[in-house]
Image (tube, rainbow, N blue to C red; front, side, top):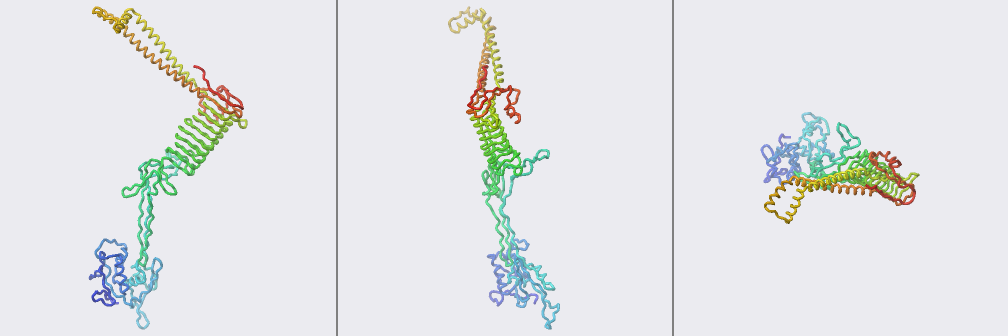
Length: 633
């Protein structure tokens, strides 16, 4: 084979058989053929020209395969391509002679790679012998042309192919690979605010201690305007190429609409070229597990219950809490307003608001420092406390209740302390109240019903009345003494004459001559000290009279308050249906209030009869009504 095969490029005017004319975007220079990319009308123009070359039985001599691939597919094989006017393609286009074409065998295409069986080739010397000097060398440019016609139009490994040409024995080598696509990146949510998720680590305390009963973050709180998440848009992948040069498209990355994640209390914001999800109100953040929707509300809603596994003990700062799962035994929930839709076995501690239990309170406790407690189901073996509010229970068994007001449908073996008490049916219970209204009182298993009427402590009223009355008496005595002093001063002859004449002059009943006016002035100067004393005593009497009137009004107010306190102590039992005992509990300042006693002492005190109790009724049938009448003061 000649070192430089004959060129197959011809002119359109005198084009010979087997020759090819260059396209308008290819320029022939002394050192080779150059492609001018800016003259390509479409991406297919260069591929059409290449097909025309190989289909005509020609090939590119001195082909720059990297440039060749870049011009065909835009793949620079690791080379950075800036916009250029011309790209070197090959040294020439020449004839692919049949005897040379016959040297190349078929390629084995298997999926994403192509292999070729390399073996040394020798020229026949004529006597059947071969010598090393007659070995036939394959050419990379011819190989590329052969591969193209066999369907391998992309991904030829030039170095591996050239190395295969030099093998001394038959060897199959992979000479081309397809280019796999580079997958893109799905759109994703990037969390911006810390603490958006619950943290089930034990709650940290001061001094590097931890509370194993509480979790670090159970219900995240956010402020209005806080950026919760940012949407990172999807990133398209990079297409690959098959061996035949066809595009191997990269799958389209997944996308989502951030608006679908915006629930109540949030909104979408477009800022700094990005899309954000913002909180519009201050409150508690929740993320729906099924829809992934973010919402910010002023109340906490939980469906998983309170247990050592799910939440631990809870210390909540929100205004309202909804619990749809059970609050298990020994678990503590400290909150403000709470609505529990399932059974409660643990402790609820409220600082105010309303504690509403839709089902049962069993073996646990509920307390409200400044609000009401409502149990729509049954309370059993529980303790309920609302000293500043009302406890309303449909049915209570073996419970201890203490509140300002208690309303119970049926109380069985309960101990109840209240200011105002209303019970439809009391059975074997110990009750204490100032105002009590019972529909029926029954005994159970030889255990009677006991009702203690809490008499008011009138000692404070009496002490106040005694002090006010003593002060008013002292004031009246002082007024009498000052008035006696004033009468003595007015009885002086000169003072009396002066006062009488001054009255006549004011009434225009008399006039004075010039000589009388001189005497009048002399008399005025004489009685002036006494008149000043009378004026001072008069002002003092007015002040003391005002003070006495104020004392009288205060005495009336204390008497009214005392009477009102006494009038509130009354008891009505519509029907006594079993052994029932009603007693008045006399106040003793040294003794603590009933609701302050431990449970064991409270139960013993409410059924004990001693000097502090006064029996009002004992029987097993009939109605009973009683009102307290205080001693006169």
